[in-house]
Image (cartoon, rainbow, N blue to C red; front, side, top):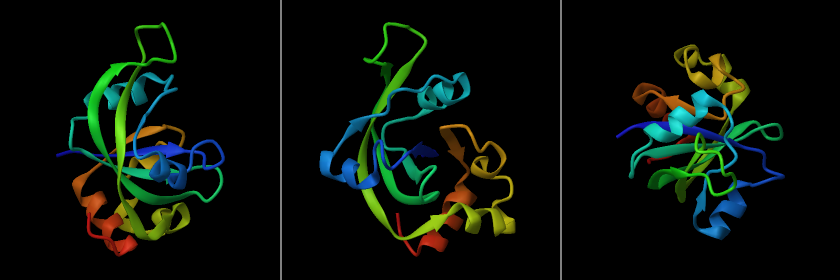
Length: 137
């Protein structure tokens, strides 16, 4: 299994809305590195849900339920989406400041590649986020 992180601005699409919807496709990605990460996602992979711009914290865990397919919001073949389903809300949100201050997470994509909207998460980073959030995935 692989681990990922996706960023969403809460005023556009919050974790709470995602839970209400029960499933969504992750669209609108127009960055090649982020697109490549979407293409690499496999059914069953777990995804950290990060509220960007406001909140700036990891708030939940989603699960990939359908692998990459053509983004229905564009005719351009280059862009794909994956389907995500809510898996679990974190017991305790993990803020960006907390992540940046944790020496164990200094190499995390969220710290190094702050603007990338779909990121990889290494297994040891995942475990640390679960520890900080007091959550069992």
